[in-house]
Image (cartoon, rainbow, N blue to C red; front, side, top):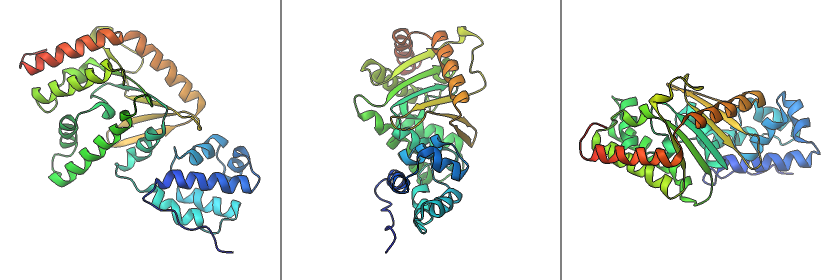
Amino acid sequence: MAGPKDLDPSSSPRALLGAELRHAREKAGLSQEELGQRLFVSGSFVGQLEAGTRRMQPEYARLLDEVLGTEDFFQRNCGAAAKSKYPEHFAEAAEAEAEATEIREYAPLLIPGLLQTSAYARAVCRAYQPTANEEEIDRLVAARVERARILSDPTAPLLWAVIDEAALRRVTGGREVMAEALRHLAELGQRGRAIVQVLPFEAGAHASMEGSTKLMEFEEAPPLVYFEGVGTGRLEDDPAVVRHQRFTYQLLTACALSPQNSLALITAMAQDYAHEEHP
């Protein structure tokens, strides 16, 4: 009997690969925990592969073909599922973000990617890669703008961002760009598409001074937390880590301005930038 056909890379290959994994696992009569034991991973990790929130690595594809008797199906197709328009360190997080039902993010240094305008994104990408040609910058900006399309849905995902005042004070791309960026941020908050809180300087020391954090919740997979540095990123699903980061985020929201006061500050700063005044 012929093996399964290759997946179509144009139709969300990671989601399709996850669906095929679930079908093959159930056909083999294995639970997620039982399959995880044979792969030397947790059952929740298997659930994330099936939900498309985690990337299937070649070593797991090989083991899956062996355990589930799928010939070389997963090995053939994990490459297509791994292709991404995003930088390697961020690709898995970006693709998980697109599947999330809730996203909570603390941004200490810049406006979060999902809330950026194209002009602000261009300034950030150019700062990251000052020697890149315009075609490369265009590609990076287009990918970032495309990420934000998940906000076109009026209800999902829930996006809650705590943004450090430093990110709003740093003139990125010039005052005109900043005015547009803050107006966009305020507009998203005013129409209820995102909950935005500003963590003011006067809050002093806080629970997340060591860096940014992104918490993601999913309908059919365990939660993830993403830590990002300069050119690096790491997804974690350890329950203890996720629990600690949830507590950290609660502390941040307690220290931040209320959503109403945050929007008032953001709007005032946008007006100051537009009039070329120092906020």
